[in-house]
Image (cartoon, rainbow, N blue to C red):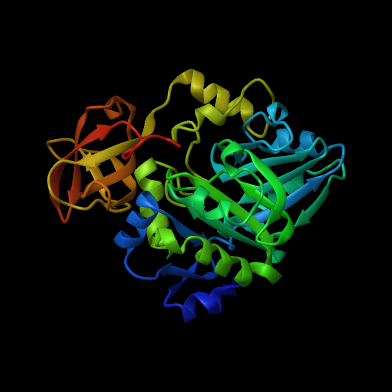
Length: 362
């Protein structure tokens, strides 16, 4: 199990530590609900330094990205970020990721922690034109400062006008007394905020400065437990649950980042799948009766016929009701459709709803 730079620090401030994707990470500090609501209502900080960062440089960098990712990276401009995924050759997903355009010949790819080696090997396999690739993951810390008071908190630490950084863009500048810090208007919570990329050497110092700046807003450290409930309320996919090497990205609702205006890995097969019509779809489900849906629970019709399976489920701290994502046969995917989740062998009434479960996409 690998430690992130602040693993011991998180343990010292009361973090309950677990093995997550091979990293020693805080799952919670107080309670998942308290941390979840702190982000929704004020501001919280996640240490997500386990995430992977690859720098791609050179004349062929864009061509390589176009080859291995589903979205059209040619539309990016300096300072713009794009959500995308790496299709595999058999109809599934290697990983989902963010693509940052630093300059015309320099891109930062941010990948999931559990897939760092897999993604590196996959992209390297297609790097036939000698694009310079650097794995920045071991030397990079990443803090996600999320919530409605994130801007007020972080503005105290920089002269950059954070209100001008639009969603899915980034800047580099002076932050917390340090130069060349990447500040990104991204997140995995739907509560708004920023992600701060910084060298490991200054991680603890910057963490403490963020907490001093956010003290008036009752800023809190947030663990992986609340990160999962926050992302699920927004309907954001989690790799390993809702998307995998076996799941179709089109069935997962990633058609919006699948651009057939270019050729990419397995694009012909994915296009054919789209044209043939999808057999199943990932849908949002809200429990009507009492019950908490969990991963792998069966989704059924009223008479108990299995029509799908839950991929992510929880009790929503914001709604105080069970919510889930799951794949169902396409015939049952329409919003408003009544379905049933088998919870402890009992069919529990639920319905297909529109995403997000809470608020609007920020």
